[in-house]
Length: 282
Image 1 (cartoon, rainbow, N blue to C red):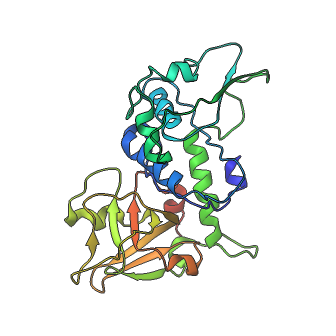
Image 2 (tube, one colour; image 1 turned 90 degrees about the vertical axis):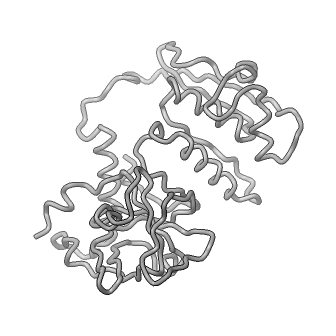
């Protein structure tokens, strides 16, 4: 399972939702931002692992992605001869409608290739799985997506614990970073929060540790963002507490201090901390 072999990505954007259908535009813009940050010198191929949402808006997102990026191969996976969605051939894409793109297909691709030529074709492959039981829910425990998400968060935050054997230390026993309100901006991704309620929303929550392109400037108080930016994310942390008198955020994170110095933005999304973290504080 993914939570057993986590690794640090080269580039990451904190989307802030568990499903892209809640903000399709932000999802697609996040993909574009990641593509722009890819290594231009690496010779190894880039594999875009899409989600399994292939109906309705999910299918339109796939159409957009094929147009946005100069793909050379599109591989569709299926099983039992079942057609989950239309074949995404170059011929089909000439007339297909996406969420942000519409025929002719070259309009969105030009933004990334800096070329005004007709988009080149790609190789389309359909792979039918013969694995027994594919497409059916298994009988093992902890197979639901929310359980996998919580296990991944627990595995990530376990880096805060001592490597020596012993009982799990609760959050309030760990020493947090003290971050001045004036040093970082605070924003909410998944909903609109009035400035006076921003601290209530963010306190004791999971936040993405992000890096804005511009320097954060304060007029002496906290820097609160009216809109959540799409910017690089270097990891996650728990906003353990907020001291409004001294103007400090108390932040717990396993991110290395050398990387943490680059962080100037905390983004709150709809991803909640596993309940066991909050209910087992003894």
